[in-house]
Amino acid sequence: MKSARSDIVKAMCLCWWWRQKCSVLATEYPYGAADIVVLDVDNRLIETEVKVSIADLRNDARKSKHWKMRDAAGLPQLPDSGHGFGLGYRSRRIGGMTNPHRFLFAVPEDIKVKALEVIGELYPYAGLLVVDTNWDGVMIKDVPVVLTRRSRAFDSSPVSPEERRGYEVAMRTAVCKFALGMARARVELNMKEVG
Image (cartoon, rainbow, N blue to C red; front, side, top):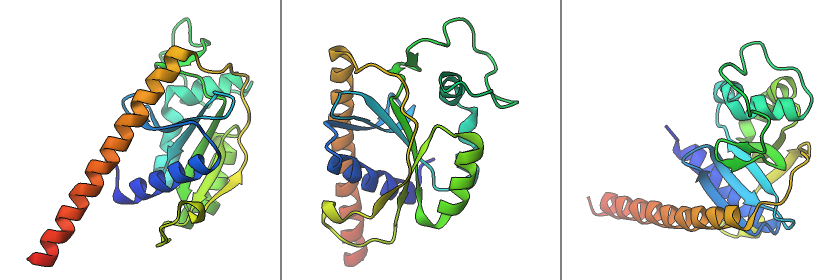
């Protein structure tokens, strides 16, 4: 289950990616396989996974996408990963989406040091965005997200026009979900003030 802290990290990262001139930004695509996906200026996919605990960061290694990225990076597999994959695992696609050109984790600042250790150990291809979740500003240009570790660039092609349309639909859906979440939060706040 996602936490409010996770939602804050995700929202701040979306603002950061927007500032990087990414043309499409979507969340939970497809159906939760990726916390954030963006298309860069060259129409290549970048994935960001939001983690608010070290245990969750470590557990991500069980996902098939990491097995596939380790393979693409020429890295040996971890002892307990990669089970159950048949022929075709080297395909261009991971779970219904194009393999990412880059992959990053995003974490709150208070777990940055330990996250860097875990990423170096389990995900040497991954980058790291660090978010100050105590920020109380309102300007997108001031969102405190720092690229703390650069990600490895995978050899990937730009997404197809059909895939791009899928990401655009996911982006519109994400905007609607965020708007609904804001409206619900506002109603709850108003009810607390009245009650």
